[in-house]
Length: 241
Image 1: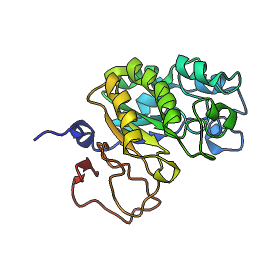
Image 2: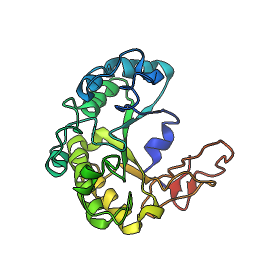
Image 3: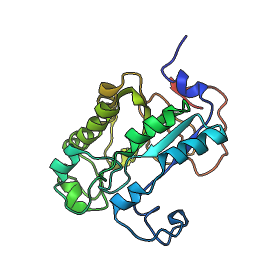
């Protein structure tokens, strides 16, 4: 019997990395490597996607999880939907389309690309976040917010199609208002671009290996230790390892 996660499962292992303005663009962070403070566009332009793909190939990685955004409006690719809703002149997507270039660079080595996105949007700047929809209180999502924020995701999903094999959606915390219906909105948007894309929505750090939402194809699995080792491939129908 086949399962939608078979490709991911058979890939065995890969690399998960963040590329963000307050990490690579922060002179006080080791990942800055002496580059200094630059604009987000300059930071995005500094990434050598071909070198990255080459190094992943040399180390035997079969997939890469790459960050589209986390907590801000500095997204790793242009997005007209974000620009229209956010109306920000300061926190904007970079002009370079990093995922599109990664798809091409990684494809030379048959390395799959997966993308990281968050359910709490550009929450670090409340003025921008509020333009996506009302919040009951700080970081507490509402359905209008989710529907607007997912429109940004959908633009990416449609653009990349089957070039992106799956998504890991962070910040979908039930304690901040996320429920099964809201989770499904993300999955529906992603599947419009690639019906075979696998999705997991993260409800935060857990103490057990568990499926967060009914629509999850694989377990998000965020932990702060390695105490729990999977003993079976699936947990409630979602791939566990």
